[in-house]
Amino acid sequence: MGEKIKKVKSWLSSVFGDQPVPEFEVNTRTVDILYQLAQSSEARCSDTALLIEDLKQKAAEYQAEGVHFQDVLLQGVGLSCASLSKASTDYLSALVDNAMVLGVRDTSLCSFLPAINNHTNVLLEAEKSNRRLERELMTLRKRLSTTLVLRSNLQEDINKTVKAQAVESAKAEERLLNMDFVTTKAKELSNRRERAEAQFASRNMDESLTHQAIVQLSEEVTALKQEIMPLNKKLEPYMDLSPSPSLAQVKIEEARRELAAIDSQLEMEMDFK
Image (cartoon, rainbow, N blue to C red; front, side, top):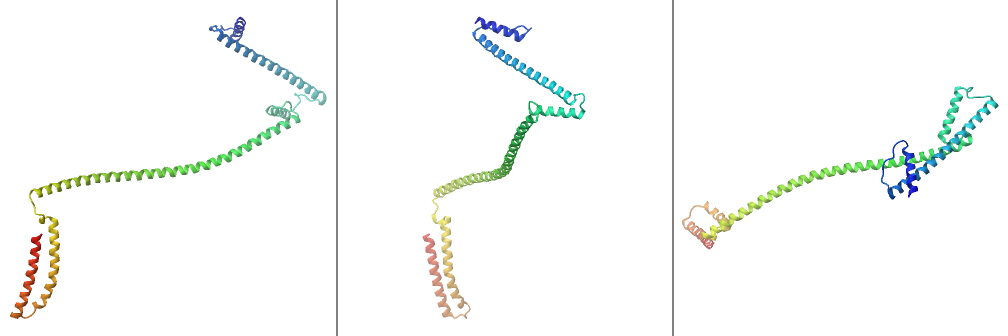
């Protein structure tokens, strides 16, 4: 426990430097957490230091290699950086930039070709993926267009249905109002009929004077009139004859008897009613 606390205090002092270390509660849990952080920090610092040393070593190697190439160019060809033209310097800068973009170790053809092939394959795969995505996008656009048309048609059908439902609701409400009115009127007429029947019953009214009996009697009278019409037609030829007292008297008596019989029958039926 004591070694951990010493290590934690040493690590905190190195982290905060000249600033004072904040106060914290010293217990087993906080010391363990800070100790783990200290170990992780030291491990990362060690890795970083090794990486820095490696980069320094590579920089030194690149620098030595650059000096070597400069010596070779100067001694073998008689070229130096100062003697190169601006175009040559630009070409060299472009070559270096391409090498850095491609991530190659040097600017040799053996390094450029695999890197270019690799990037070409990546470009082809990207173009292939792009074409596939364009096809999928076109399919989605077609589906979206179809969906929008269906949505528009569905919205139009919904609007029509809402309007039709509003009209049907208004008609149904009107029918209910009419039904209520008819029901109320029917109840009123039924009450009036019951009161009238009670009033007629209290007055001991003859059934033969009811509307139905009078209508039936009128129909029978009409039928009897239809039966009398042929007899009147039989009398019409005799109306134009010159009067013969004996014959006319006989015909008149016969007609009177027939009329009397019909009147008697009519009176009997009316009395029966």
